Image (cartoon, rainbow, N blue to C red; front, side, top):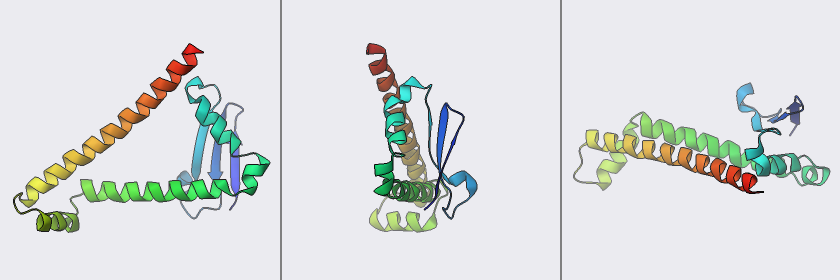
Length: 136
């Protein structure tokens, strides 16, 4: 695979240039050196560019995992938010009481909760990193 780093000296963007996806989906990671809340992420990301790590194909392994994770997340979002009839039927077979409309409403609530939790976790990580940096 081919990798491309685009930088303005502060922001570093790593792209998988040979990935068979749309251009906006080729972005693997982006870090901004001036963002003190991202120190660990910056070190980890730039560490992926050293000669030894490049030889280990770690970038490709991480890319594949991230790529699959994004596709699965997108598919789950489609299934949960677009009232996928197959999922409704599957759940209806396993559950005897709720009507299909109630199952759809429940799925929307559950997926909303998942998205809110993911956002809260992301914010907690940022707050924790900022607090650690401030303490130093």
